[in-house]
Amino acid sequence: MIKNPVQLRMAKLAVWQQRLFMVCLCERMYPNFAYYCQQQQNDEDVKSYKKILDLIWESLLVKDVKINFDLQLEKLEAIIPSVNDDSPYMVYPAIDACQALSELLHSYLSGEIAEHTTKVSSISATTIAEFEMTKADSSLSEDEQTLLPPIIDEFDLQWEIFRLLRDESHDIIELIKGLKSDIRAVATSNIGVFLSN
Image (cartoon, rainbow, N blue to C red; front, side):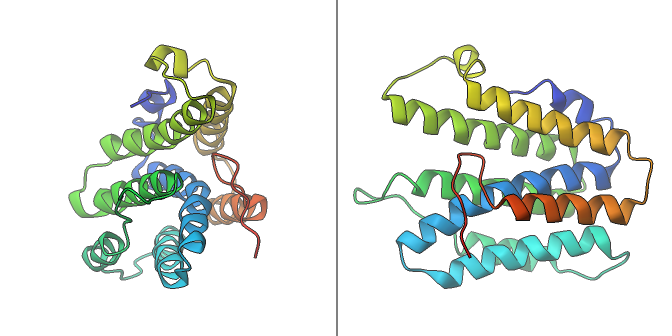
C-alpha cells in the first residue's frame, strides 16, 4: 500500500474531517465502480453504491441523522465484484472502490478513525499505481510508484483536501456541500474514468 505523508497529518484532524476526506476519495473512485457495472450491464449495483455514498454525505450534513451502518455494510458487501478468468481489468478498480467505501463504513462502526483514513488514502493511490503499471506492462517498487506523475497528482489532490479541512474557517456545511459538488461536477475518477450521465 502506497503511503502519502498527508496520512500522518490527517490523523490529527477531527473525526468529521477525516470522514469528509474519506468520502471525497470514495466519491472520486465511484466512476470506476460505475464503469465496471456498466460493462456488466448491471445498473442496480451502481445505484446501491451511490445510495450508500449519499447516506454518508447526509450523515456529515445532517446532525443526528439515523443511519444503520451495519445494514449499509451488508448492502455494500453484496455488490463487491468477484474476479474470474473472464473479468475485464476494470474489476480491480471497482473492487478498490468498494474496499475504500467499506473502510469508511467501518469507521462509523468501530469508532476507530485514523487507520481507516490511512487505508482509504492508500487504496486510492494504489488503484492508480496498479493502473499505470498495467498500462505500461511493468512492475515498479513502492518507491518508484510514488514518482509516477499520476501518483504525484493524487498526492497533491489529497493534500489540497487536507488543507481545505485544516484551514476550515467558514461554514462547515458550505465546505461539505462545496466539496461534494466539486467532485461530482468533475465526474472523473482517480484513474481518469469519466462518468457521463
